[in-house]
Image 1 (tube, rainbow, N blue to C red):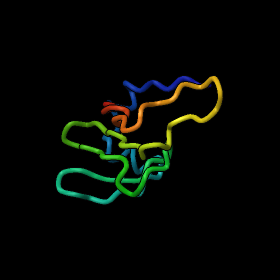
Image 2 (image 1 turned 45 degrees about the vertical axis):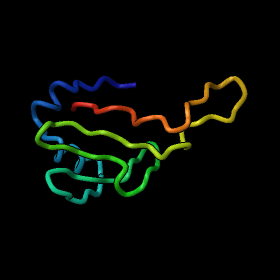
Image 3 (image 1 turned 90 degrees about the vertical axis):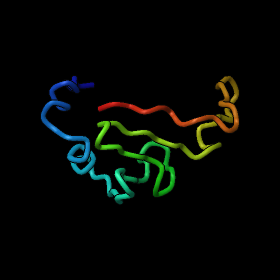
Amino acid sequence: MSFIDFAAVKSRCSIEQAAKLIGLQTTEERSQLRTPCPVCGGGPRAIVITPLKNLFHCFPVIGRWRSNRPGQPRQRRGSKGRGGLPL
């Protein structure tokens, strides 16, 4: 895996530019941007991008991340999103 200097990326690129560079199709809602999550496959509003705070948050579809395989941990039903990740 190649190294990505996220501090350098953050200093040179806004969160909106980063979303466009990776091909996310966003829609504007008030002061936020919404887009489907390419990781969890959530609906059209799964990711919230907040440009003023320079962060994003994914609200995964409940039940998608639960494992039915033996030996794999199960997430609780109704678990919260994965948290706001600053870029």
